Length: 624
Image 1 (cartoon, one colour):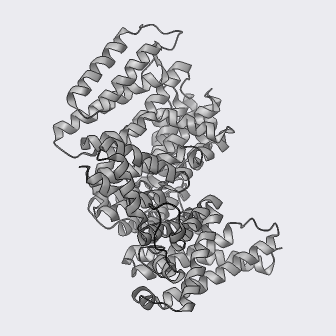
Image 2 (cartoon, helix red, strand yellow):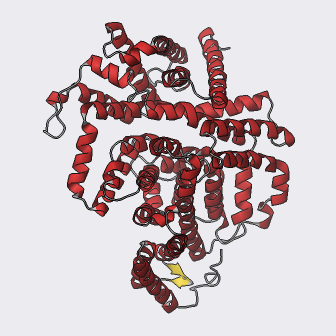
Image 3 (tube, one colour):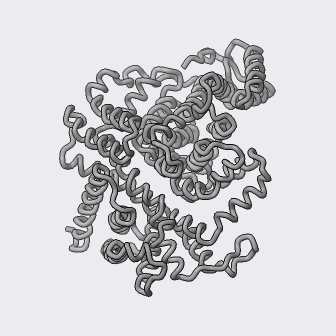
């Protein structure tokens, strides 16, 4: 029988979940409140839920854990309540009282504790390090990083109460766009959307060579439309596809790497994409429909590259399609759950008509709830609504604290001038060379992304890099998408490769080795951002002839690169031929017509010179 504290915690959790979802849907329909209120209420809901549901690991006593969670909940209510009650003064006056400082300091520590509980000590330590840097600026070694230092009052005023700190853009996007979009994904999942997309993936890819792995790629791309998060994508589709691939004879590490790589690409796939995409439209001041237009071709090329690598590995190893009796009927699946495709169509149409993201997502959620009653398999009862709300809020429990934490980093960098110093450092090392600057940016994205989720890594970098790239002639959309891509790919980059960790856990293999395998399989995807920076035609910018030529050339380059990577085409490819194909692939992807033409000639000549007979029966089959 639960104790009184446990009962209070359980009922309070349910009230916060339903109240938070109601607040998100209400503001989605009517528009957000003023920024301090919208973001403050959101933190007032999410932080207590983190303390009530994420263990502190300080005690093994369940009663003590519950009591600590409730105590931090009360403290959060006091800190955020004071902030909301007197926000006009706190946000407008340059001087704050000692009590204001105490409340703000408590608020910062609560956010860091929430980050520690949800992400771990490493990121919480980074946040503490930034706060220490803000206060201890005069004692920092090295002229490059030293600054005059901020008082505790300055830190609280700028970082906690200011509009460029905790309550800045990252938290603002969480409290407006992202929460309603995640609610939409949660409703689709609660009505069987995950199973529907998995079955559609089986219908599309299951009957071809290497069917299980291709199902993983296709279903991860489809699921990316409703989850927009690597870890959630891996956990949802990987639980089915990884065991399926292993039963078909794939090495566990390969199976986990394919799922991690494909699921990371889910954040690139319109119409929903990842959370950072909603921050991007705020930075770029463009419509979401425009962002989808620019992002669609690179996303499709990403998944094409993974499919090609999986295909040639499957042909080389002789992996057969899945059995026909395991492939569901498309008409039967649509009869059972096809009604749940309508909300996706509604969302895409409203975004294309340039309705606000919040309103479009709210209408899509309402549509999903309404059309769920059209089929027995999708019908939601009260428990179904509760499941959808809990799924959505669970997705926000990690994202919201880290976005508030990203606000701490951005606020410290702005207040101390560290952002300008880092930008100057990158420009000094790059010395006006675009390729060198892009390499430095890629490294910065991957290093930051090792400890931060995509949205946080993107936000921090978006305050540093874009002006450097645009000053070198890169378009703003290409610069921001470049950051977005590498912030996403950091999920498969060791040592902190979150997507690979989840996939490796399902496959029972080493996560670091899985991460390196995913990098190997996704090498071509590391070239794509460079390709669209140098050739904006991939972003559908430019004349249609140039767009068709560059997209076609990149498609061929990816095909050739996949052959070189797997070392198989009809028969095993010798080392010298693989080197030629690697070079041809890079040349085909490069946005210069004569370079691409030379790459095409080299690739075609190399493939034509290969033996036409396979090493064993079945290896000559290369059709998709």
